[in-house]
Image (tube, rainbow, N blue to C red):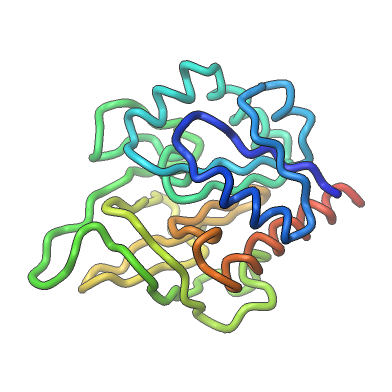
Length: 211
């Protein structure tokens, strides 16, 4: 089975992600070892919490460059929730620079009457990259589970794989280009749809190993 490194920087819902990967037929390895990230067949960067502590923990563990190296190597990479946001250059949630792997900023939802922030619960995706492996074997515009007050705003709109609408605001819900994929929602909390997304990621890892 493919070995997928799940990055441990004290900011992720690691065990739920690992259960999903096991169901999808992969061997998860929770780690903060740069060597194990390099040796893994793929990398997942989960994340729950606030932007500044997340990037501070990553840098304190010496993980910034290994994450950049993993993506540059071409191995499949999946960011989840905060693990999507910290790939960007900066966030209005904090003052620390992000990893800068993706050009753009993380922004806060604007306050609207009768609209709750954080955006929490099930919502429907509007898929903008229907051919992305993320959405294989899924119904069109599937429902997934969100918990977030901030959203990513990439400079290049072509990398958006899906959007979501909360109130009157339509924002990026997933990005995908080359070997890099990242989602704002929680696949590990999104029932069968989320499990299929993780399975699609594992399938891409298998294809990469076989190539």
